[in-house]
Amino acid sequence: MQTKPFRIGTRGSPLALAQTRETRDRLAAAHGLPPEMFEIVVLSTKGDRITDRSLAEIGGKGLFTEELEQQLLSGELDFAVHSSKDMPTKLPDGLTLTAFLPREDIRDAFIGRTAAKLVDLPQGATVGSSSLRRQALIRRLRPDINVITYRGQVETRLRKLAEGQVEGTLLAYAGLRRLGMTDVPTELLDPKEFPPAPAQGAICIESRIGDDRVDMLLAAIDDARTHEAVSCERGFLATLDGSCRTPIAGYATSDGTHLRFSGMILTPDGATCHRVEIEGKAADATELGRRAGEDIRAKAGPGFFESWI
Image 1 (spheres, rainbow, N blue to C red):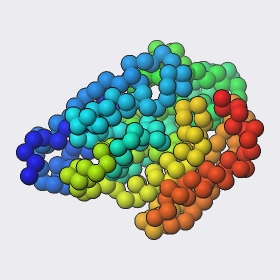
Image 2 (image 1 turned 135 degrees about the vertical axis):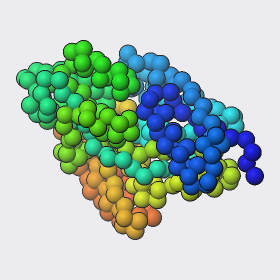
Image 3 (image 1 turned 30 degrees about the horizontal axis):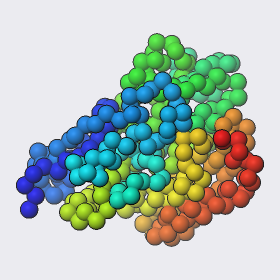
């Protein structure tokens, strides 16, 4: 019987803490345990500390997870809570994504200062985004817009917007919902025209492979349909490199038996894109994602990917 609190690792941003508290509350309710049986351990990551450069310049997505994973591997943490879209496709040996919470809204939210809609911004307006996918999709929609790299926590980005540093920015609507900030967006973008990042809107829990005690704990809150959908999207991402140098979008839905996936790759300037759709058994989620990645890679041809380097 567990007598010590489970130690949950997280980053320290308001959004990361909100996601971790949601995980703790779901676990406490599922197992009839008091919240005190789950200790939230906040760690600062390199990705949080370095905000003046793009992730591609400083090492990619792993900068948000490295410190947490070190303590998972050493046994100082029992598990860690992450935004799934921040996770590298290759995890350190000995770690796995064990569970996913029910997925939130997958759409991107536009927050405009001088226009409510992205398409209505003035000619040559400046928009800030840290995501190469969003940057490429913005340029595809409005080639005249000046897109700049724009990092930081949600509150920092909104403050920069209010100060006039940019005329608009984009954030994941899921994060705004979790922060109780549903009044902030001026437009919610259609995922058919502005598809989300793979795994956007999904909270994942990372733990050690073979830790049966933690596996049993987390199984109670794992949402099977989200797990299948994100596994497909991560399979797609892994096949196409999936680093922060690559504008990639992808979204899967599962009904528990059948899965559908649509994906997109773009050149960074947004001028050229390729799309792929695939469906099959939900049980084959990861393989379907890999197959979609191989299909779109063949469709684009080798020269397409050289533009990403």
